[in-house]
Length: 535
Image (tube, rainbow, N blue to C red; front, side, top):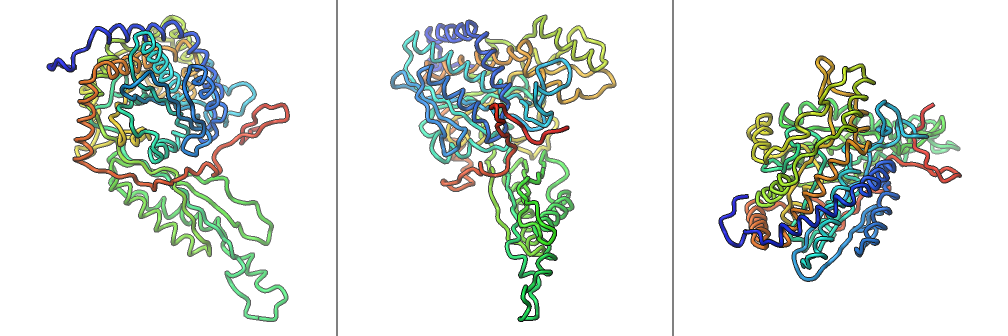
C-alpha cells in the first residue's frame, strides 16, 4: 500500500503485534489442524450444523468470548464478542455447512467416510477450512492484543447455510453487523484467477432463492357433482383432481422452456431447481396434496434477478391455477451485489504478501501423487497447480478476470458475504486450497479429489496457516493504524452515497429452517444415519 500521509504510517507496535499473532498461530498449528479435521468429519448440511455450531460456541467461550447461541433466531448460528477496551470493532466469521452427495474420506482413493453413504454431506469448498482459518486469525489477534495492550473489540459470527446463502442477510437485518468498523471475509480459492489475492472491483453478484409450494387443499371441488342427492358427492371427481404434482411439473416444464429466453446467453448468470421431498405418499383415490420446488438464481445485477423472479412468479401462479391448487411462496435468500473497498483490499494484500502463498511439503506431494496413481495418471514431480503456490495482486487478478466477462457485467458468481458489504467496509480474499494440475488429455479431475484434499492435513493445513496469519495481520493493522481505518470508512460512505441499495427482505424475515433440507436421523446407539441410504 502506498503511504503518503504520516497518519497512515505503521507504528513500531504494528510489526511487533503481527509477529506475536503469527507466532501464536505457528505454535498452535497442530491444534488448529486437529480442530479442522473434527469439523471436516462432522460435515453437517445447511441449517443442520448442530454439532459444528456447538463446537464453535464451546471453543469460543473457553477462549474468553461472550457468545450468543442461536443468533438472529437461527438455531445453528452464533455471535461472539471479546473486548479489550475502547477501540475499533472488527469482525470475521466462520462457515461450517457441508454439501449433500459429497461424502468423501480423507483418502487418496474415492470412497465415503466410514459408515456413511456416498450421498451423505461432505465439505467441498471446504467451509471447514474457512472457519478454522478465520478462527486462527481471530485467536492470534486476541493474543497479540493482550500481550501488547491494544484496545479494541473482536466480533466473530457463526454463519450457517452459506450453500443456500441463508444466514448473513438475517444477521444483517437483525443488527449483528451494526457498529462494526471493518469486516474481513475469507474463502478458500475455488476459481482462477481468484487464488491468493483479494477481490478488487468485481464482487459477487445478487443471489435469489425461492420455494414455491403447491397445495391441493380442496380436491373435492375440482368437479362438483350435479346430483345433490349423491351420498358421497364428488368422490370420484376428487380422485381425478390434478393435484399438487401436476402443478409442480407444469411449473418445472414451463420454467425450463423459458430459461433460455429469460436473460442474455452470456453474463455469468445461472438458474437451478430442486424438487424438495415435501410431498406426500397418497392412497389410490386421493391426489397429491403438497409439492414443493426451489429455484435459485445468480445474476450480475438486481435488474436481471428481478426479471427472473417475475417470470418464475408468473409461471407458478398459472401452474397452480391449471392444477386446482393454491400457491404459497417462501424466500430462502435475496441478496444484494457486493460493495468493494480498495483501502481494505490493499491493506489485506500487503499482509498476504508478507505471509506468502501456501507451499506444499513432501507429505502433501506424496498424497497428491498417490491420488494421480489411483486415477491411472503418471505422478507429477510438482502435482499441484502452479497458481496454488503463487500470489497475484488484486489489480492483476481483476484484469485477468475481466478478460472473460462482458464489459457491462459488474459482478460475477455469488456468495452471501455480499450482504456484509452493505453494513461496514469489507474485504474479500482468497487463499489457495489444494488443487492438482490436469493431466494431458484427461480433462478435469473427479470431484472427490478436491474433497479429499480438503480433509488431508498435509494438503489443507497450509491454507489454514496462510489465511489465519493474513486475517491476524490485517486486524492488527486496523487496530493500530487509525488513519487506514478512517480511509476505509470514508470509501464505504462514498460508495453507499453513490449507489444506495436498501435491503431486499423485511426486517422481520425469518429463514425457512423448517423446510425439508437434507437431514439425518439418530440411530439407537447415537450414531447419525444420513438419508438417502444406498444398498
